[in-house]
Image (cartoon, rainbow, N blue to C red; front, side, top):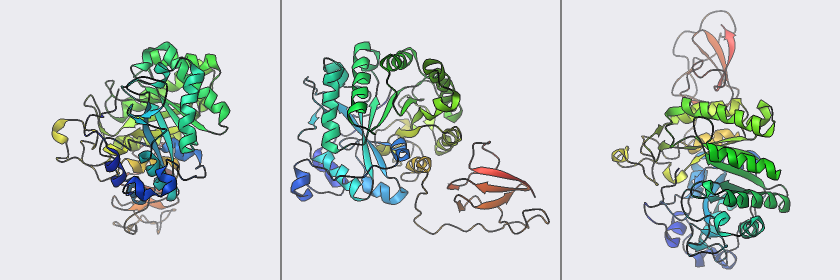
Length: 416
């Protein structure tokens, strides 16, 4: 369903340079040997908001620069696969052994040095997955435990896609491994990501949910990817999320709120593999839906793509290293920051809202500034607009009060 990897194969030296780390020798003896700095666990909301980042492919951006620009603290590093030559040992992208890795370890250390952390994603689209290569759930779990131990992980994502997705035995190995990891690593955050359809997910997705139920395995969330399947903008995505909520309820016997708490969204910023377009406004709408319904996860593919192409539309094609839509650098990462409940930093002081029209006399709006499309607002800011007073629930800019429904950023405090 996704994962454009062919655009500029990553190399270790380039990845380290982009991460601002230089060569492995410059990392120091401990990091050069593959060790990573230890980190205190972030709140689960950060692991739930972590966008995907390929650290060795698709022109990897500097993760620490993204942290500085947006306030982002967590990253979903992708992907762990079986070796391309065969075997049940973990590698990055099927080519770089985890056991001897120093490149990704250096990226992890740099993120942790700034107070952030990482989750690691296994699977993705294409390549041989460990669930296919390993003989059973126990050996699959043992391979993943090497990754957990190597990078001292507190979170891991099982991204179940083709061709493994249609292999019942392989999916059973993956979910069985996830359950074992959950038991052997108390408190580890586990997400399961799967393709989405207008009905929530397809036949194989439902089979995956049934397998999880039969194993007695409940991850922190099940996330769908509502793109590459005939989707068109945010309305089609929120409709799929509503449908998926129904599938979670009927499969596990959960009520609506419990199902939403175990449900996640994994989007694709800009132009999708199949030519769908998802703009910043679409991300805002889905974010509003997710926060209003108290969903368990909001992420996207990918930070490598969260920057503008040249030309901006990339000549009508999809890229693995830019979004193919007009945007500022890291525009889409800011929605992840909002989902985590943090306020992204601003490079210049926020513009103070100033009245552009005479406030209505009387009522509760006297002295309250008029909403401005260019102002930045944070939780607790009040404005007046269209004869009503509005209260901001979180960071926002250029979101018109009253236009995004009850799940929008603005709470209507009544008429002036």
